[in-house]
Image (spheres, helix red, strand yellow):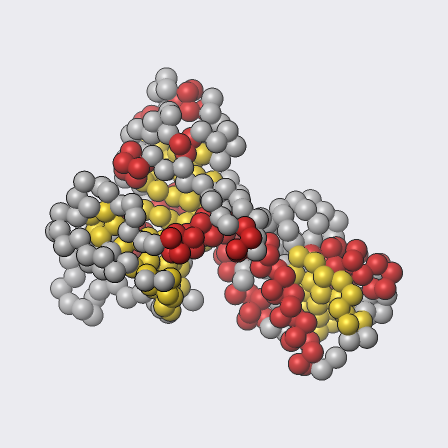
Length: 369
């Protein structure tokens, strides 16, 4: 195969990998394409955590015709027995002649071992085709597998004068329907959504995903719902607690461990994270969420949490949606506050910004590279 053909088929594998968005966490997004005599004879992607890997789907589709073919895979085939058998072994057994891989898997259980097994079996190996693009779709996985700290993505919708609600807390709706559809995608993409107790008390949010699956081409998945609640004020009848799915998480003070009402929450399947004091570092919260196997967090607010995240300089990326509306009230709630910069040289500057248009709304998307 020439370079252009390799890149063409790897690009297809990357597109397939994206279809697993929201379903595979904390595993990586992986796509695979099998080509023989210039034709695609098998395709697959990792669809769901614990389910068959991309290579398995593609090999099953190709069947016996896979013998002598080339497989394109976006991430190094696994070499260990996990929830599924090792893919490197399946590739060898299928009689694959050539294996083209975009990037090495940073997971210590794999990390070059899969490639070595395939090479030792006499299969021709090509590494690094569209490596940058393949790593881009797995930023969440790469961060989490390397340090067990979830990827933190900030989302908020603001008026042109930087407010997220009126002075009495009314915020429905600042942004338009198109922008809110994107938010539902983010709630599916990231493994958890995090808000503060004030958001819960004012809005009683469900914190679920209402994704249009057909429009976005991926399956809807409800995130873990994380509420920062130092004084344990979350109402038992609160919507975020009543899904009966074991995905409600309350972060609260150690001082509340002896409270009788804890049992009421636990009876709803609520998970607790207890921290010292009443003012928590987001870094500490993320570490505890990482221990639960949560690889990514969508931070939706409110103002206090967003401000803390900027103070700690812990935001990996984000998207700020801006509506052409002006409240014009100094007492309305800003999306960020508590800072006192003396010069424009010192203020926060969003890194690597790009701009999106959602009807009459725009957004600034940013990312720490």
